[in-house]
Image (cartoon, rainbow, N blue to C red):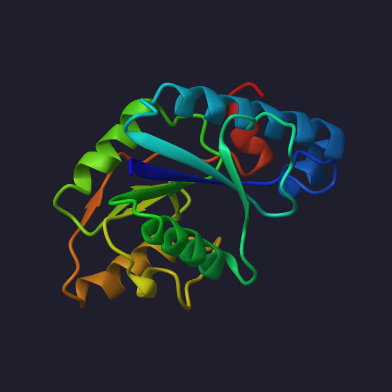
Length: 196
């Protein structure tokens, strides 16, 4: 089986996406921004060789049978907090036979195909790889084997997330690599910076 690329998304429904941005500019414009982010992410993924990488889209709300992600495998996310939903997705992909698994969201306009390729290369000899985000979290997580501790009791969406995760891994027999630090689009100031 090829390597797996998990994509966590929501359906672009007004009032349900980019809520922090929507508080400033309204849900209609915030949803339009989210659509642009989704389209950017699809463009990036489409540049990967499907013989090497199998993209799988996991929806937070409901699986849309006719949308931007037609042509990709589609799945519902599991129940639970973000960590548990990610853990279940990784477990499913490893159980299906993937040797290396990455997960990304759709919030990073700076993401390029080379970041995904570099992440898979890191996993040739490392257990975990992170793409650090400027807000203290990460825009990408990859594994060559399932390591549950990465997903449990973490301060999701907090600026200490990556630092705390790495501190825990440093105490374990786990090897990890770090990619280039990039910025996510979570706030209106982020969107303005990119002219969205």
